[in-house]
Image 1 (spheres, one colour):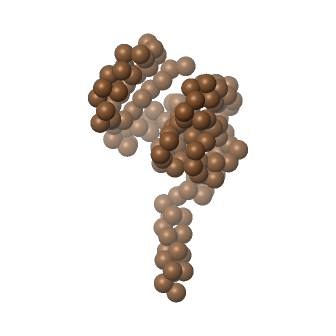
Image 2 (cartoon, one colour):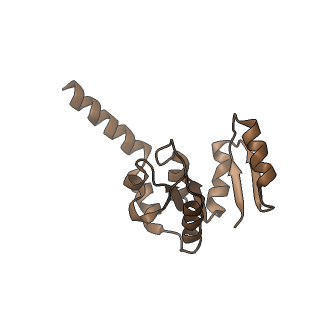
Length: 139
């Protein structure tokens, strides 16, 4: 399975070690502008974010909205966002990550997840819910 990594890191030694140990099907593209990432999402089968610290991640929401199968962390609130429409892994367990990737790779892309994200997780809905929370707090 080809792996395309997009983004920067402040940990140069870590990046160097990743590059040294990567397969020939791993591509390190560095930082990209948001608009330049869209074609990668549209052509990808899977978006993987096995994070210890992030919630579902905007990148996962963007990728899912564009039709990618999502492999996400089982830590935190990702299941609240994606429900049964995503594949989950323990970010501290390589076999768990591998199994989730294989499962996502072997399943057709989920139109249910795409529709769920596009209808529920919009900036308009976020703004509305934020406004309602402020109204509730301020009376």
